[in-house]
Amino acid sequence: MTLPTGAAVTLASVVARPTTASPAAAVLQSGGSPLDPVLAPIYVLLELWSLLMAALGDATGLELLQYGFMHRAILVGLCIGVMAPLIGTFLVHRQLALIGDALAHTAFAGVAVGLFLNGVLSLGVSPYLTAVVVAVIAALLIEVISEVTDAYNDVSMAIVLSTGFALGTVLISLNAGGLAVGINQYLFGNLATVSAENAAILLVLFGIIVATVALTRNQLLYVTFDETAAEVSGIHVNWYNRVMVMLTALVVVGAMQIMGVILVAAMLVVPVAGATQVSRSFTGSLLTSVVLAELAVLLGIGFSYYGEATAGGVIVLVAVAIYVVAVAVGKLREAHDDDGAPELDGIDADDGTARSRDTDI
Amino acid sequence: MTTGENSGRVAGECDTVIELSDVTFGYTAAPVIEDVDLAIEAGEYVAVVGPNGSGKSTLMKLMLGLLRPDEGGASLFGEPSHAFDDGERVGYVSQHASAAKEMPITVREVVKMGRFAHVGFGLLSGDDWAVVDEALATVGMSAFADRRITKLSGGQRQRAFIARALAGEADLLVLDEPTVGVDAESVEAFYDLLEALNGDGITVLLIEHDLGAVVDHADRVVCLNREVYFDGPTDEFVGSDALARAFGTGGGALGGGQ
Image 1: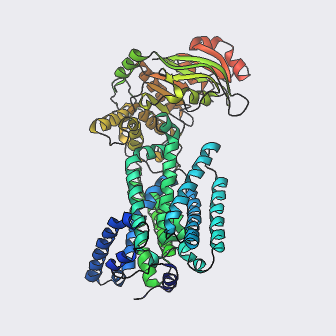
Image 2: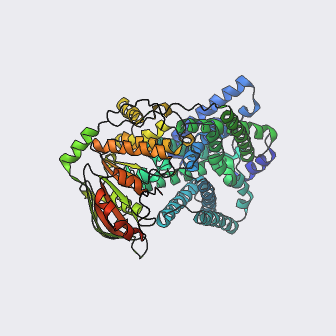
Image 3: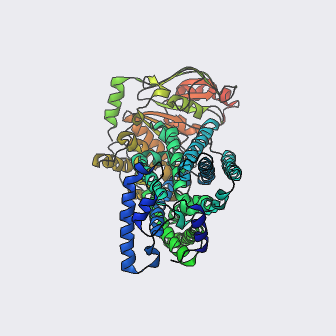
């Protein structure tokens, strides 16, 4: 098995339970975590996924499909490709792209809290779980600050971002020893360190995020497009803003496994920016951003595996390349658009029927 | 549109649509709105005018419950404004949306939002889509339904926003300086539409900077500059000195369309 060099190092030094090619073994090795009883049904799903990927590997002869850790990495990547642009679309159009970055850095503090607790109290809690808790609290904090000050402002987000990162580095330095060695995994992400437990946590986050957006899509769209009109129509804007930042926190933590703290925000923003260039409708831009993100994730994982490079960085570079193509396609389309504006009908409020007028208004 | 039904519902339930009693409000210690008493009845066409910074938009927010008065009370359809949650009865048209300028969204998707107060978490039914299409037809925008809204002119965009308000089948239309940046011809068409909708029984509350448009179209004018300087029929407003007092000028802004 040819592992990327960096991956092999971190794999050996960081993961408490080394990943193996056998899905059954992965399930067994997830034993010992307090979450296992809860996650048991998801481990079964992971096993089925692994069998499917192994069969696909046999059929195609692709080397990267021969390994259990890659099966999980691909699954996690596919989930990120859906949930990051799903939430990112709402954030970008509210001009809140920076919030992803701020929450990623607080999630890093959450990882440090988890490592610290594990080191001091031997709790055996996944650092990703403590990252979820800390990032969600930070998300609510940002939202409450914005409600009190009546605006999302760069300064408060920058403060939250720096505080998160500072807290993380301090906790890690206090708890030095074996832990500091594996910190690259959280900063830059790693394909090889997606354990069965972390993949299962991600699937739970994915389910929560997709279900929440599916349920509240009308309200989120209205709040994104026109906050005041949404509020007048009876939507509790503050509640939906809180939902949105909490979902962002969940996405960030979920995507951190592969993307790393530093690059995770890119997946919220870059595919959405690309989709904005080539889409006309909101629904179209949502779907396009997911397609572009999936393309970036799958190509990025492939390139990083065979090129022995860090997956997060490669995925973002591919995403940016796709964005550049999307900008070019968007400009070309605009240039070739005949833009033959249709006739504007006259206004008629009497019977609700529009009539064509000779002169446009 | 089912505007006839709407006006019937208003008349049957509560004749006073908006009521402010002794309302005072300030973002800081200094009040922006002071001792305002105001009642708007169902079916009225009321314009609120005043110079920049006179508190027009704040007054609108107090009326709609987006802000709570420091003193006094505000009610909407007989309920305290801040507790009013029957959002489908109010249609709101602003100068512009809060989203990023480049947000890809079609006119139909914007108008569809008018139905959200009715469908909540659900999907739009066939009937809902019929109302959306009817609202688009009413403002003459059917041919633009699948166009990206950011590619439209200011006038066309405002038509889409008013269609969104119509799609909500609201009893009350609130418009906050809706014709800023809209070309003169479209402005005229816009006011014709408002007048027709008001004729159908919809209460219209217009926050407006363009005094000429107000004088030409509204039935009643409220002239505001922190406090109410005038509240009465439009023709009496034209002959009064309220404008000069509120604006602190000779009233030359009348008809200026600034």
